[in-house]
Image (cartoon, rainbow, N blue to C red):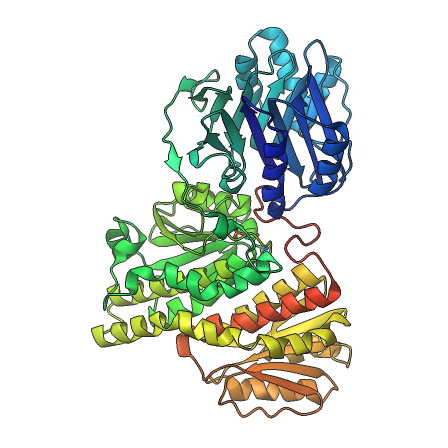
Length: 615
Ligand code: M6R
């Protein structure tokens, strides 16, 4: 979602702002802009991509010692230059604001400010922030305090960076519900929505916390927290050294981040499972020092997540119920947070999120706590994320930065972690004798290699891509634990190739979707050699009998013979519990290659954002 980068230094910062915006592009956006100091605050904006902004910067020969910049993902008002950030409030001393998040009470603030003579030039919720600060500045002639007072009136989620024309020697930033990170440099100070935008200038970073407001100059910074005092109490925040490597955030020899991330899955999973590389037994401590005690009292699991992470939860339900014998519910976070579910203190809430900043997942986890669920566990890929900080227990997937909007390696590492959770709970519930535990650990250790094998089907999958690229719809079928994998395959295809794709539990076909089958509707089936294979084969015959075109991902030993309208790609032999993880790979590759044929923007599909930090 929106990205913020700000810089104040002893040298021209405009190149830093542009490089930062480029590194934030993956978050998803539709317009971009910046202000920089140039005898006042000068603004450049475009309703296009960052490279178009770069051209404007070049034309204007833009240079300045301080500036704030932004990529906007439209929520209030269409993508246009007028709605692009930074937003100004005019008057004697202009104020410029960039904002990530949503100001929920923007309408009442807008009305109030209009009644006081402020004129609005955009449709955005964000513009109210600039005018509100200007209004407060009239009450209290101190820019920092004016920002504190304005922020105290905002409801919703925000990360903001603000500059004042009269005092361009400082940038004020504030965080509430959306990530913001300070970069502490030798010759300047910086701020960004994520670390990758800061690495060009510094590795020393501070993760701002909820309610923090900071002032940056080119040689100093100070932070206050405003949760309990509108004007803030000074706080010390730890400076972390970021170990993120340029290799991790660069493309290397790959054409797209999604391609890179698909092929990184063996190492991402190996890193995530590193702790079991030398052990024959798993301890609950993997999930936090309190996990043993908490798991002992856990009678049920409630998984909350969105999108791909939700699919990981759906797979885990099968494992948790089958192997650990523990009841498990999985809910879409955005639905759960507005229901009136019956709470149970003995239910462990498991929130799954790649980014750890997904607004719905965070809100759902906190809502569950409010309802009376005692403990929460976060499974997440970003160490300093809000989700990790707010949960009682945590497990970090070690996928490395995932930059492609379509989630790939985050998903398979989430599944690996959820298998670890399953083994841990199964063991604690006396459902897993030591011998079986050792076997399962061995199986898990084999996963990175099995993923390497699965990736070898790429050339075969690529051959199918041409056929799909001509279609407008596709159906994905799976049964049992592979049904959520079919859902994940459909999600991948629709999000990057814009082909409408639906997933069905294959047994549901005849209850409706069979009516859709004709030669224009490719049907993808996930057909592992498990106990449901014969049932699935019957479902496939139902499709064939109606002239459907079948694309089947089978295991090596499944007796599915290809024919004119039945295409088959075989993976290795049935992989037991690992099977859903391995069957994910060809579906990711299929989506990727179809998108390539269609020529869509694979890493930044239209309308989507990487971290969905607003509702
Ligand atoms: O960061 P999260 O895992 O919480 O994100 C949840 C979804 O927004 C995300 O999985 C989304 O569905 C992906 N774009 C799917 O590829």
